[in-house]
Length: 189
Image (cartoon, rainbow, N blue to C red):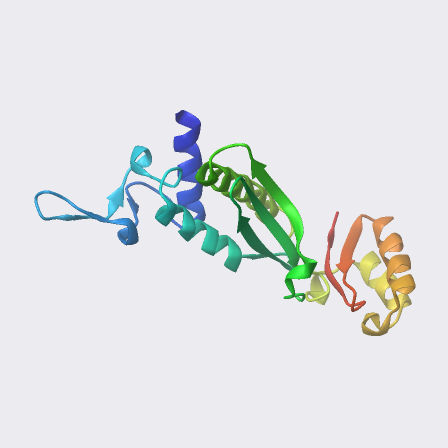
């Protein structure tokens, strides 16, 4: 029970609610005395058992971008997948599995996948999240030197990108690139 409450708090914080009582007017209920309840305490959060509450989280995850990655959630009868793909590939065929939860009820699989995603997401937020290709001024001198030795990165072949990536990895940096041979997400390893 304590873990469930902790996980619900984790979700509430992901949605931007930092302290209780958490304000969720969209999940408010009409009380017997005619008041409309919009504030909830830790033990009143219902992400683990109410699809309306949980879908708000699913929608936020699908609108989230982390270091050039976008996410899609597939909720099937007996499993939930959280998939990711580079943000510059809107075509769903590029999505790969990040999290898979199965073996529970449909709502619990989704809930557990969402909790695992938020824990993963929070770790990503602690890392350096800038794409150093976009923030040239923040690149260390040794990274700049390697990049300059390759010339224009926009016109590189896969082989050249692979060589560049290996050279950067020797100094503790890496990046991603897609089928269009466009590098992105230059970051510290």
